[in-house]
Image (cartoon, rainbow, N blue to C red; front, side):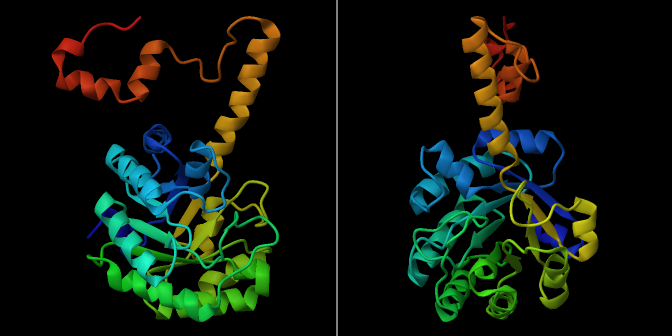
Length: 285
């Protein structure tokens, strides 16, 4: 049994900040969180693309494999809408599973997809979505891989349709249901009350979903909370700030955190690799 599946079975609350590469995944683990969420928006941005589903399955799986190998906590991976039909979805599930992820998330948006908190989205017919979820569950080689069924129906056809899709996804074999962007605290509370499998809540700062404490989300009945943009937007914001300071002041500013060269190298797994090869064990400047 994977550690993530064991956590869910043991009623352990899972809090997974979003990461988009090995460095940010390592930061999540070092901060003491018990899981990492591979954000599709972040991975897309790090490749120079918006969150419109422009990266291929191979590109996403490659990043997922690197991230999974770089941490000791479970990785929950975004797989957009499965990259095509049920057959594409089945292939994606097997590729992600072999890359070492603990869970894979599949959604019901049409192509091109959008961030779950953006306007003017559209979703595929319910039967097509459920067929993908069923194919995903059938394709996995081990029941330890968790299938997360995400629906964006709340923004398109309303809350009741979103609940119905979540229930159908659970009936089709999904281990976890992710109803994206509930818009009131009442809707948030109703999701785990009305869906009979573990539910995931997406907490997006300044998004459509009301702000909520992690403990409150757990008390509502959510088993997993993800924070997909917490590092992506922070890194982008700090980058703009520090670069503007350098340009304005004409000298290297004191960066946030003020890490030394040695500390920075250690955070990039330098200590681990130095322990393998004594020849590298020389002081850093």
